[in-house]
Amino acid sequence: PGGVPAPPSPGGRSRKEGDVLEPTNPYAATKAAAENIARSYWYSFKMPIIVTRGNNVFGPHQYPEKVIPKFVRRLVNGLPVCIHGDGSNSRHFIFVTDVANAFDTIMHKGVAGEVYNIG
Image 1: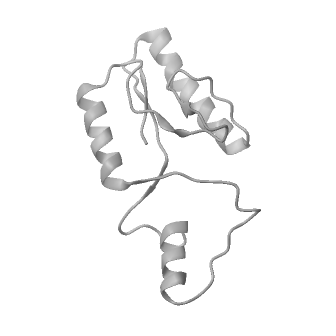
Image 2: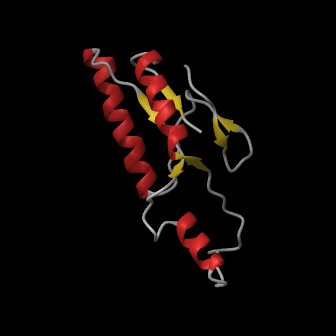
């Protein structure tokens, strides 16, 4: 499969497009289920499905309550920011124009039935 490897998993290794999805919460499970439903149309009917898996996207005009604009606003105003838990969790972010460029490349050069990691 094509695409750029996603950031490392919590175990430290990069994720590959062919890796088995192992959701750890209901939200992730619904995303995995939706991907499987879409891919079933490729396998059953050869409907031209391309799956993309991305990270958290950030950029201009983002909702102010999202973590990056919220933290920037608080820090600029000399206010503390709150990290939940013990700080060991991590999130990976990608700039919106990078995601748009990846989608454009995948739309023009991607292969139906494939999965592409963006990030």
